[in-house]
Image (cartoon, rainbow, N blue to C red; front, side, top):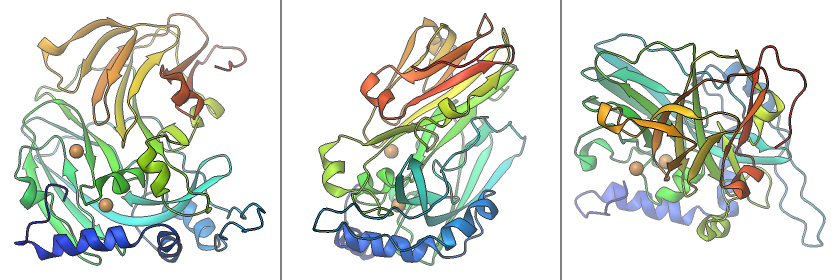
Amino acid sequence: MYFDGSPRNPRRGRGRLAALALSGFAFAALGLGLGIRAVDGGPADAAVEPAAATAPAPAAPDPAGAPAEVPAAPKNTMSALAPPYRAQAVHKVVLEMTEKTVEIAPGKVVTLWTFGDQVPGPVIRLRVGEALETTIVNKTALPHSIDYHAARIAPNRAFADVAPGESFTYRFTATTPGVFMYHCGTAPVVHHIANGMYGMIIVEPAEGLPPVDRELALVQSDFYVSDTPGAPADDAKLMSGIPDVVAFNGYAGQYKETPIMVKKGERIRAFVLAAGPNTWSAFHVVGTIFDRAWIDGIHPENLNLGNQTLNLAASQGAVAEFTLDEEGVYPFVTHDFTNAAKGAVGLLKTEGAEGTMSH
Ligand code: CU
Ligand code: CU
């Protein structure tokens, strides 16, 4: 938990020391050891576990200058479709916190810390008036926690650190509709977010959102890749604030390589989150204008009409609704183009479109 190291909670203080001590290559060794552990968290496990289990040990950079060998690891790609709303008075979510070694951009293999064995963590969706009961299960060697921006709750109680091997459950009732971030709040928070511990929670108004033809969930985040393949985030790069990779949904340019297929004229609703830890999103879809958008809270008074770009600080979420009026290939980007060049770019392609587009 990131507010203080109160002497009333000595476990929290030790957690911070442990996290700080385990920096650099020590993290790499730790990450590898945990990366090959069997986990049973997310739906992607079956697909990724064999590759992770056979990944060779990451080699330290050769002092003579030879490039370190990059271990084989699965691509950290995922569907861009938002999960549908499912009515439940109490939504029960179990999130195993794991470590896994994956590729986040071509040739860039890192160890990530996860919620639900995936980065970003799973999209959680409920409505105002419903409760969310989360159980976090810490399968790593470091303390972790979960901080929901959608909650009105005492952080020192709910967002407390959970020691390795332990689990913790808490519940809150959603009061405010919007697109919110959740993340690990264990110190140093910047490391826990940079290593992948974040996700999106969508709180719909009590009466729900009006139906549309297609819903997408896009989480933009920034990565600070170590020179040691397979290691967690590089401390010095992270403190510089200049990322190597900026991605939607965990892999640089994944929807440029495999465009998101849509239909001409259909109504598309994109839920967008700028997870950071540091980098903002200037979310923009080339070739259209957002008819309606909300930033953070989904209230009638927050309705934005006619945005070209959404200005999302790290942690902010948004809903953007739009149509693509001609058959074609429509890039979506952060219009902070240095970060688009680092991977925060994708394509929406209508079913009748020919060819592709580089942007
Ligand atoms: Cu954490
Ligand atoms: Cu936060």
